[in-house]
Length: 64
Image (cartoon, rainbow, N blue to C red; front, side):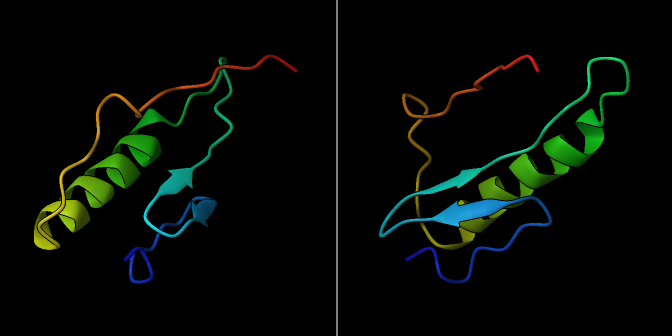
């Protein structure tokens, strides 16, 4: 189902699921790029008559 979903960020596809990852620097955040990718996923899901499961949407902060 997610075979035609594309992203400029690392995209991990599963049978009926996907994950997008991005490292965002606190001192130089590129939030517009991340927001654009989220908008693309939202548009893709709408075009494919799919609804995003907001309970599964999460941000996983890490510090390194």
